[in-house]
Length: 490
Ligand code: HEM
Image (cartoon, rainbow, N blue to C red):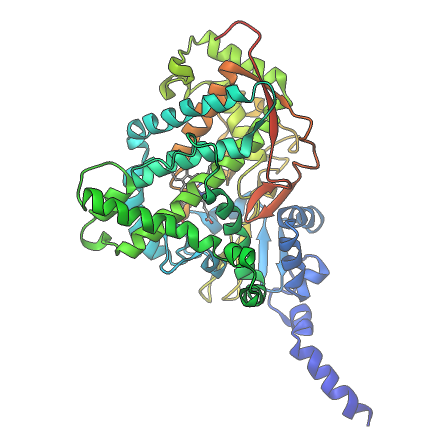
């Protein structure tokens, strides 16, 4: 009788995978939080709360450099694993998590298949390669110059950095990719695109972790909810609409330098359909705008609390007699300045735009990382929040210390090899040279003319990090005071 009752109950438990996950999984000997080993819910709940990089970092501190963060998912924090995971020649494709970013066709960022992305990347590189930097600089300088009127207007009050940076980045990306600015710096009203940007990552998270919520929301006849649900698709629509307008105006081979022209006139094996081009451009607008805005926001917040570094940067600009025609320097004059560079690098280390591990998947029976055999289908990643705080590479890892980059002439080989902010290898960021230029031009322009401070609305609590694939601040805002420089101008 007893057996008759217990049998199905035990069967149910086994069916629930809990016992299998704990006792019989080939990953069973990898340490990690108990709940993470038996259910995906531990990670899912922490993701939904925006706490992923924090709880995974704590789990690494407690359980070691290789941990299980879901029944089928491992996180690595050991520097020796980075090459295996993300390095050149490595074949771990992006995990299906990236499907949640996709529109009607795939685009460079969400391509899970490395061989497809190998064809797409050269096309994008035509515009973003370091060799093209001379063509890109006037576009960025122009937007930074236009942004100065917003700083001046904020002198009596405070500047909201996230919105200000978004205006700069969207206008830069519009000109660079679509051949026309969105005029976000000219118009008072913020473009709808900014609201859609926020919806973009929320919807991506829901598509991956709780698609049923989207299904339920779609059934609700509430206009605002339906509008929110379309946010991700609208970002792609910006690209598709811009493409149609552009082709009508310029045709397919105008010889202009923007990405749209390069894609429209691509030939042979690089040919893309009009729909693919539109989707690629829509995604590039998000990919180029948001990470740069996020990184700049965290950096300027750090700077606002460190008057001594503001002073040192200003002093460096002055000693090097950097000219600021129209308020913005030339990139060649600031690119190699050690103090400015050290500050930017430390900002990237401590506040990477993607703090969480960028997920990859073991898609063969023989995959391994650091000698650990991975069953096919295991998700693997290394999160920059942990790797960038390895005390052996970065003593006092939680402190913001630009001097660690200055004293080592731009960083030791180990520091450079383990900096994951732009990822590594075959799927590394294609816009990193552009991003460095944007960050250095923005920071030096501000330092030339203004002293930054914290506005009363900006506190540790409002700036608490929340990870929704990208590392946002809790409030999504950061207000800083901007006072004209009192000391002698550079
Ligand atoms: C500070 C600013 C930026 C940061 C921190 C950043 C970071 C990253 C990271 C970590 C990835 C890899 C994502 C993954 O594997 O899931 C990536 C990919 C990419 N980024 Fe950036 N990015 C920045 C700015 C830009 C800009 C300005 C552009 C374009 C102008 C850009 C274009 C791309 C593209 C096209 C990819 C996809 C590459 C591929 O998957 O093959 N990024 N970025």
